[in-house]
Amino acid sequence: MYYPNFEITVGSKTFTPSTTKIFDIRVKCGLCPKVDSVELTLTRDDETEKVQRGENVIVKAGYEDKLQTVFSGTVDLIEKGFRQIRFYALNRAFHLTVFRLNRVYLNQTAGNIVSDILDKLNKRLVEEGEETIDYEKIMDGIMFPYYVIGENICAYEHMARLAEKSNYICYTTPEGLLNFREYERKEPYILKYGENIIEISLVKLLNPIGCITVYGESPSSWAGRETFHWLSKKDYSGTSGKGVHELILKDYSIKDTDTVSTVAENIYSRRRRDFMTFLKILGEPKIKVGDTIKVENILGAQEPIELQVVEVEHYLSFSEGFTTLVGGMEVK
Image (cartoon, rainbow, N blue to C red; front, side, top):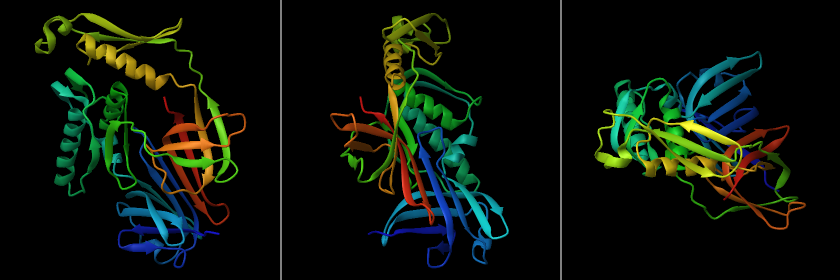
């Protein structure tokens, strides 16, 4: 039998089961524009009273002495009760949700645009004396002859839209590293119903969309990427899928026929999902967003199901122990 364990570091203070009574820990992770978060409820004492807003937080969880980092970020909110104190922390991607800018890009890939946004944010963070945001992997994605970033939405939302157009995933790791990349099938974690799976739910997605048509703008399809896109405008489109019900999207950032067709295919493949699977399993800190899991021994399923992990929630308490909730989409 393995015993759940944790280690919480806030600033220079470290809390463990031997030093602090924990009521519960809840870590939530997902694809952008969601920001990973943690909610910690601890005993109110002299040490927990010293925690301040803005301090760095690292949460590790696991069994006995085998701990894995499941969250890193900064304290955002503190709530004090009579016997308990509750901390809410966000990972460093929250800076991307409050950062807005206006930029125009010519002949740049989606990855180059994401890198530029990150560079601009990091320069501001340095000026304000804050830690910068590092990245693990940023891939190119599709090429945009002309692309505009506006301050009407936050930088993280822009990254999410670029990821959808490129059929990429965008997220931050438990260590706080940004990823903007194509989903790559990894060696799957094996989960078996009746062994490490406690509960399983298959959510049928209501998806009446038969096809998706994306409309771009400007005649660059005739003159190529050297076109001066602001001189004239004309709509053209790309369609993916077949069916009676059509979803029509207008995207002024798309300026050539090749790109509009690629974007239509990518958005169609992202939105044409039949179901989403939620698994409540014995706590597994190694499973992260972007991983692959294989589900076996499901009643009614003849073959194992492979899922792309898009959501992870770790929960640890003395009343329920250590559990992990995994949300996955079927691997196409």
